[in-house]
Length: 246
Image (cartoon, rainbow, N blue to C red):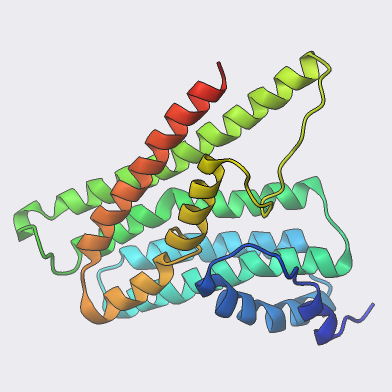
């Protein structure tokens, strides 16, 4: 079946939650990419697999001590974000979803989140620092690694709580709800988490900030700032889900 470009664009949900950056750059880029791929027979899960390669390549390039390679890393990160939009678009327009597709899509997100802050810490190590001497810049690598650990651990805590909640409901034969990724949150914690994820995190302000770093520097400030961001998310998730699991 041949899909039209209009079908691709119209498949985008009007109430889809995303940042302004995501809406006006990766999302717009994803429409022509999705149009080409879906008409060549590419499935949603295959688009997610492609995004994983972009994620890994982006992190590797950001670690290389060269401005040119850092630009390549940022471009690849934008391509990852674009493909992250493409897989959902293909699934919606073809009306074909699968557990494997959902799993690989999540794997793509976890892959980039596990390594990107460490990669930015390496970029900070390889560029001028506002705070640290040349002998002390190795701390930026450690801080970047901690950011990645805090970020991925917070998401593991969230996933573990969701699993335990579903298990408890299953054992007690109680009804349970599974929230969709783009479902608007009701609780205050949910609203704070969504705002932080969608507007400050990887799919929000993070990539535009990296572009600015390429022009003006300050990778060290970004590394330290996102370490606080990741630690706050880790601490918040630890306390909140521990309290909810009582």
